[in-house]
Amino acid sequence: MKLVVAIIRPERLNAVLESLYRAEVRGLTVSKVQGHGGEVEQVENYRGTTVKMDLQAKVRLEIGVSESFVTPTVNAIVDAARTGDVGDGKIFVLPVERVVRIRTGEEDQLAVTPEAPAP
Amino acid sequence: MPTPPNPVDTLFVLVSTALVLLMTPALALFYGGLARAKNILNTAMMSLAAFAVVGILWAVLGYSIAFAPGTALVGGFSLAALRNIGLETRDGTTIPHLLYFAYQGTFAVITAALISGAIVERMRFRAYLLFIGLWSLIVYAPVAHWVWGGGWLGRLGVLDFAGGTVVHITAGTAALVAASMVGPRRDYGRQAFLPHNVPMMLTGAALLWFGWVGFNGGSALAVNGVAVQATVNTILAPMAALATWLTIDLARSGRATAVGAGTAIVVGLVAITPACGFVSPRAALAIGAIAAIPCYFAILKRASTRLDDSLDVLGAHGTGGITGALLTGVFASAAWGGTDGLMHGNAALVGKQLLGVVATVAWTGLATWGILAAIRAVMPLRVGARDEALGLDVCEHGEEGYTDGEGAILVLQSADATPTAPLRRSA
Image (cartoon, rainbow over all chains, first blue to last red; front, side, top):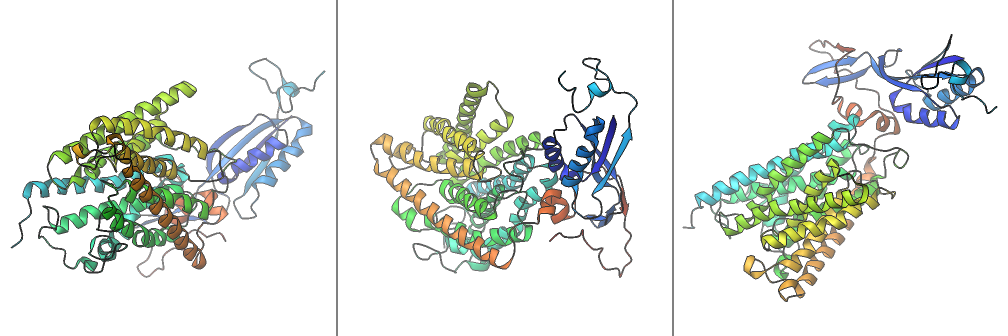
């Protein structure tokens, strides 16, 4: 099992969700985060005060997947999130020690995408 | 020596002008609440900017086109650039000419702002400014002349007390044309667009109702029975529309929605606007209750089409305005200050009202198309795909509606520094 953590542009979120759905990845967590990846600053003005938005709004996806789903998941995210400009984000694939589905108590392979294959 | 203005009537119209003035910022809240958070400022600015563009053009030229003596189709230039508008009593009223000018100006501003609901979240701000400026001179001012300024519809006996035809049918028709020419938002039909702040929208609806008392009641231009009648009708009709809307909501889904309630109030106000000084209070209840039905289903149906009239200007103002104009022909009564309509044995009035609707829709549709086609020939009407996805607040205005300021670094500019380059613009 792996945990796929992806940091993407908020405006690409819908495209990424659609892409993941097509790749049959089910079950994910989305959070709004702020970060900085060397992109061009966004400049804003408020009553004569000019500010540089150093931290950009980003979206973080966390998806627990079985080994065979790691590559399809990563590809789906890259395809949908890439614009080619600096600031498209990053994907981290992390090893996972243990997964528990709270509702049923199922563990590990049974508890991540895809769900357990029919016996 | 002409009669000096009546001080009581003058005070009344002064207050009414302030009330109608409030309606444009109220519309900014109403529309702003319905938009998405990333477009709140752009949506609000589209309403507020009408003061800067339409308000000034009204003083320069619009008022003269609408209200100066002229032909049956347009007024002359005798009142252009505020010439010949002073504190003397305006003909046909008991209030100073300058006040009449300002009162009418507030109508011109909100009418243009109403259209913005059809094209929010994707239209370029510059193109929008150009559009409403031209529109107010080419569409609004002439139609105001037709109905109120001594033009052909008024002479024909078409009834429009406070602007059902001049304001709402023009805005609704322009919304339809603008939404189709600018095109739908890029993710329209694939993604649900939810209102980002329903309490803001309801605040806007409440303030619109409050301001509408000056819009309709003030259109009597004097403290008299008609002003009372128009004001009371402006209170009764939205109540009836609200009751109908909630009933349909409850019958269809078992849930009375707040966004529906805010919409219903506006629909009731729109529908009673042409009628309020010509119909009985009982008829006002009927007009509000009836008008809610076509508007409810027009809005419901619109969502399943490719027409991205984003905030349903056509459904609320177009449908409501047309229904109200026709129902004025049905319910108008000589005993209540109008001419007798269908209910009082004069079916011909409905025909006249229908003619008014058709003429206004035809001219507004054609002229709005022409204006947008001309603007499109010199500049894009829409922002780029990237800006649309990011939101127009940051891209068009360089601000965010809601920010906690985290990660914001103060840029200190030396006295001779050139302004910091704005956010890169996508192609």
